[in-house]
Length: 171
Image (cartoon, rainbow, N blue to C red; front, side, top):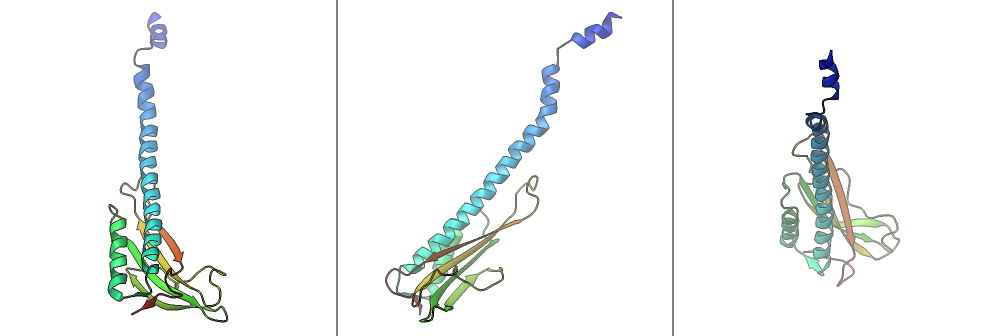
């Protein structure tokens, strides 16, 4: 008769039972926070790549195909240590004519799979103005797929006006 009462009052092992109940929750929180930080870092890196590519191309009066290829190669280096097979890059020049209608002067891309043509936000270019547009897409896949089981595609754009001329011509 005293044995059940002693069992109910016995506190030995209570911490181990509590730990065993909390461990799965703590593991999920840890893995989830690591996955979310990695996804945020991927998003931040591709935004930086877009800005850097547009900035480099906007610094000249002309740009060659080789220079555009180099700018895209630098973009691939900037996403390191993320895998680059999921990286899409596109650099374009957009100009507004005298009536303010925006058209594409030239474009080049590498592994770009997103739909649509390059564009600038409405009202960004006044008549006679030009802008370099860098578009970057990245399909982020979590390494564990525990909290983020699906691929997330990040797309970022950068718009920079040419620094030394009204338009960067492709030669």
